[in-house]
Length: 430
Image (cartoon, helix red, strand yellow):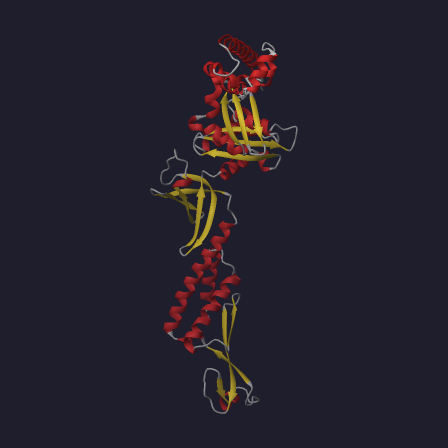
């Protein structure tokens, strides 16, 4: 093999990051294919490829016989002894094969095969290179814009930014520089296909790592991210160093750090909150900018009720329920928001007032109500006066007296409970 050809092939391999050992294997396989096509077998052939010297040596091993029946695997004794006189019948004879003997057609085919194999090797190299970089931010130039995707040129490789991975309110032009995170790498028949994204939470995390050294160094940890790309994101952070405020470090002096991230994300609103291992505290912070007066948590069912001051209920829910949804995703709890005024009213109504707890009712009336199947004041009020009059032992005056006592007592209890609830909510407000 011509050393100049080997050097040219080696240069191509270097440019395309193909290892010399891999290239040597490619060349060996190409020659094996040529031998197979010419001789029908490769069983008695050995190939040695020396990339440093630019040499390819092909050896054909034949058995020495009296009469040759298969010229591919056998050689006559006289012919073998003409080269090595000491050989005898039954010995093996190694014959050097001249690559030029394969003919122009096979050599041309081999060149085409070599080019194809180098391309395949290049695709394999690119696949493994980008596969190991999943989750990494890459920078490229917009090369082509289609309805469903944007083609970006990154390090001599075309990567794809699909519509679903684009921030909905962003627009790009050809030639513009764009940053995205490598989302997925697949090896297809056309070669490696690299998909990038600007909507993945991973993209926002990597941006914070770039802008906030404490995150990159591991001093501050991002505990969770919930994104509505292009609209709002909630990020929970904690510090491994008590001296460092994680929220303050992420925001930066005069907001310079977080503004860099916001600008990259086309002015997406970002709420950075302190993570807490206490669900009540974490949920309360996650509902920012609203400030709940109380959080009731059901850890078993992973649900929570957030009692919100009436004037902040819209903030807690957010446009289209977005703020509440993001808080639920961030905390892992299904959050239900309730107005403070309505929640305590409902809560108060759910408290059952026992007949026995009303001292204004005589023992005789209590016993009659119990025998009639009434245990609480609510049951009597729900039954109504007409039904009570039909019961034995309940005259018109008795029924009127019972309802007067129950209504006044229930209204008084409701008023007191509402005052207590208001006082409690003010006390619990952060």
